Amino acid sequence: MGRPRQLFIKKQVQTDLYRKTGLEKTLTAFSLTTMGIGAIVGSGIFITPGLIAANYTGPGVMLSYLIAVVVCAMAALCYSEFSSTIPLAGSAYTYVYAVFGEFAAWILGWALISEYLFAVSSVAVSWSSYFQNLLAGFGIKLPNFLQAAAGTAGVHGGGVDIVALVITMLVAWLLSKGIRESARINNIMVIVKILVILLFIGIAIFYVKPANYNPFLPFGTSGIFKGAAVAFYAYIGFDAVSTASEEVKNPKRNMPIGIISSLLVAAVLYISLSAVLVGVVHYTKLGVADPVALALTLIHQNWASGVISLGAIVGMTTVLIVMSYGGTRLLFAISRDGLLPASLKRLNPKTHVPVANTWIFGVVASLFAAVIPIDKIAELVNIGTLSAFAMVSLGIVFLRHDERFKNLDTSFKVPWYPYLPIASFLACVYLMTQLQAFTWQAFGIWVVLGLIVYVSYGYHHSRVRSAA
Image (tube, rainbow, N blue to C red; front, side, top):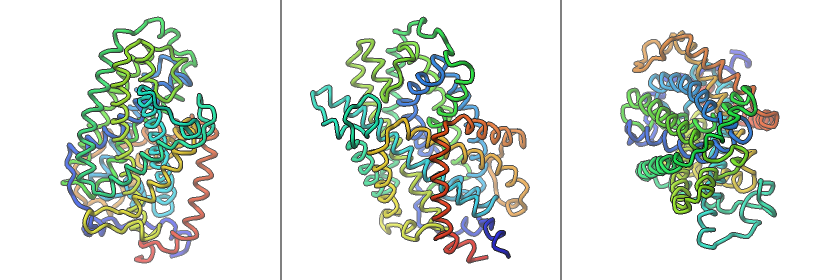
């Protein structure tokens, strides 16, 4: 086999399906659903509605969320078929490895690493903003240099976001204690978060001003699609759910349930909150890191503002937990294939957790959160997400035609095949074209860095190639 063909050698997933990995199977369909809600509803719902309305759509922000969820739903159906056919850790990376080969899997896996790192970092920054607002209610204020990263809008004299750094490291510590404990805490926090969102909608709906909806699309119809590209940032939680495959009881049944149900619940909450938010506050004032708390302050519901801020902190903590978890399991899967150092796949014999990679991921994410402004982080998440969705959607066509998978038990099939997977692929590619030039430039630099890592290490240590 020549070297060019070796770049596209495919993972034989049948071998891994029957290999004991050491990961503990403790998660149920309910656990997966709450994981998905925990990741999807939190980061986006407390950050992106204001940013999208202020910069792209105006009051039409709910249309961007609707378009984004339709595209995400198509991708979610594709993820569901893959996760029920190949219930292995690594999510899109593992699926692409199986159908497109190693080189494509590495590029996508590397892109997903950036997705999880920047997702955790951006949520940590917003967590910090809400937490500092809560402290301000008690008359406590951090020095300007420690409030936010340099260049953050509205902050003069910023330097390091110390709160974002600390919370990210605390989440890494929690995850190092085991998935059972992390899932239990996540379930409780998700319930609290949903109640807080419903509280905001129930209060703020009485302060909606119809005049705030005019003009409905101040940036034109093109703004809706640009906003939808950013809204993808809000819906990436089900991708993190799919990384849990090897820790799920009956994954062929429970994975599709967890992925699809969490996305549906999230869509209802996002669209409802967005519609109320832009009705209460004029869209031009919403370009801040804490738009929900701002809305309640402006309608003089300060008591509720405090509750919302506390609820937002709890809610975003679940995002940090689930997305950090997803990132560590992705590193575990890539390391198990030999493309990253073996230390990243070693499990603690007591907790069954890859402790080293959990701490490494936590440190890197915390440093990003401490020094990069939030408006630069958010779109960097989207391009990794969209590339994963596109590849997984297209991968379904190859999965169905690959003789190696004919005998695998698949409990879920994508409907309207092949039209839906192809439509999902095209929609994802289109939304990628709507992202800013800065995003593509940063993504290009990240990919080049990934190629250097692959050529210098991964290619020579690939377990799949050495077994061929």
